[in-house]
Image (tube, rainbow, N blue to C red):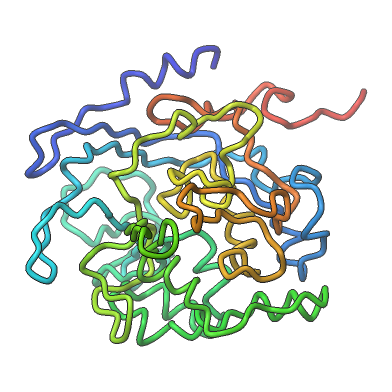
Length: 359
């Protein structure tokens, strides 16, 4: 299609949002996948050099399109006022996670009738399957790689069926004593950070409260920590989700930074508008998560991080990034909604990254 951008323009809709005086926008359709990951080598017992070049391998998603549900909502319609310890104020930190659900029962139809028009109520009985029963949650995603890497295989189904409210009681040990650093130590003789991993608990479960500066002039910042979430036992209000502090201004490189990719490491590069403060398409969440898992926030193993102790965020140990050899390609990303790039065409071969054999 020669003008896909023009084609989809009428399908970006303004939508009314309940209890919100300002309209939002929505788009549902194909976009180019922005997430980059060296999937095969990472899950093949980290069969790569985890401290090698960050752009030396191929991404398993480099030529993939995805079905995208993009929703743009005014910040004023997402935040609310909370009262904590007698102090009432607007809470700028929001949290989000997604779930997917299926009907409880599914039976294949031995005599399907094809796309027959029917006015009957559910369940429909003329298609290739008959499904019914209550909607049942089968997947849950919040912060990237928590479901895939942090939660152990014996509890993945349980996690996928759960909600964040029970995370501390049910899944905290996977965060406080993660398996990944132990595996890395076995493979590369890199000592794992000391446990319990309170840094990971803050990053994934409670939100992060940071201290800017030291001594009597130090300032506490609720970076991704909502004021009504307890940072100590019993961790009231805590749960694994992707959090965003809406009080931080949108950076110029929030969607598609310059080709230098200076901002693709989020907090590790002192870009406080990036992951784990939300997740922008440009954020290399794989490299950030791997580096944090190996101790960037605890000062373990000499890894890159953002030092706040001087009062001015400063990158230290620059370049020491645990990575999968793949970086996000900023070129296809858009500076406007829906932000993800134009999808690969189905044809002709060549522009869609499918090569024809030589004649």
